[in-house]
Image (cartoon, rainbow, N blue to C red; front, side, top):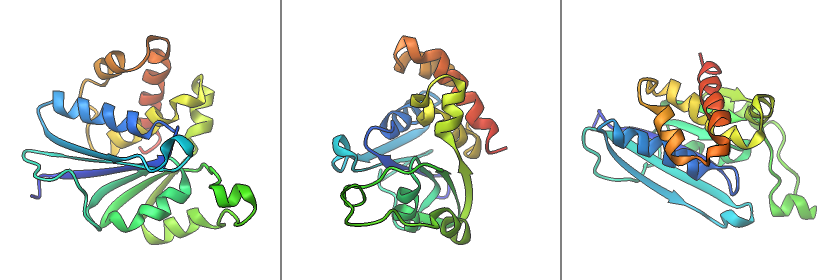
Amino acid sequence: MENVKSVLLVGVGGQGTILAAKLLTLSLMEAGYDVKMSEIHGMSQRGGSVSSQVRFGKQVLSPVIELGGADLLVSFEKMEALRWLEYLRPEGKVVVNDYEIPSAPVLSGAAEYPAGILDELCARASTIVVDAAAEAERLGGAKAMNVLLLGATIKLMGLESLDWEKIIRENVKPQFVELNLRALAFGQTLVG
């Protein structure tokens, strides 16, 4: 199954991880790929871990990415990148948002948010660090952080030629379409 590519998108509930995965999946399907997507919403309404697995190619038999099987790990929150790193294949890449969302134990004072996460990620994998929240805010709204990270995904997976504008226009609330189109384009420039 060498033609199958696997993208793992992870984050915390409320960051738009699932919407980004949905946009990726819809665009790939429209382009004629066989696509399988699975998602886990672990307490997503309460700030829990969220993951979406998107696999695409000529023929995809399973929606599940095995340990060491992801070509790209896109993390909307930096602790989540570390949590899911074992799913990345040795030659895979990580795009990580330099963003912290404290877990319940951190908020309660029972634990501290770990230091040095970005250093550890960079030491263990080919990692691109993006300040997606700040960049999205500069473009007009931090809520577009997810689509900005989708733009980075598109560039790294070589999917720029797909009709992203159509997918955004059909699946994003009208008042956010232009912001998301700007975020999608800008996200592609962040990973060169």
